[in-house]
Image (tube, rainbow, N blue to C red; front, side, top):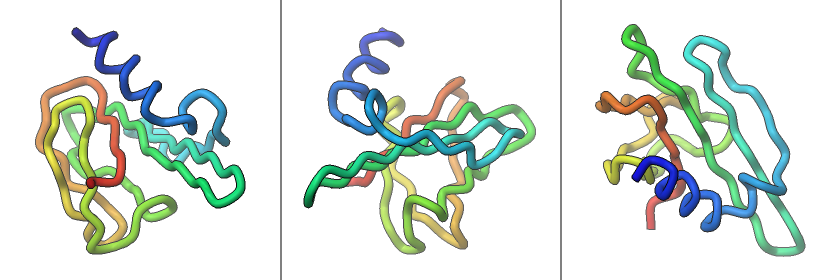
Length: 99
């Protein structure tokens, strides 16, 4: 089930395979992937939260007030002060723009 979710997320987002990689934070480890071709733009944030942290820095990709979805858990969050406060026990958070 884990690899199916990760694979589907990758299939949904060209940024994962072909995008520019940027480290946002090292503790917890958070990175973004962005891909632009012509008018098409795709951006995601991937995080590996630890027991000490439930806030994920996303300001370089998502704007305050924007709603994002953790593809892995299905939970949605609102960006506030450049961060998303996640409530998950999963080892990975796969953030995308919520539709």
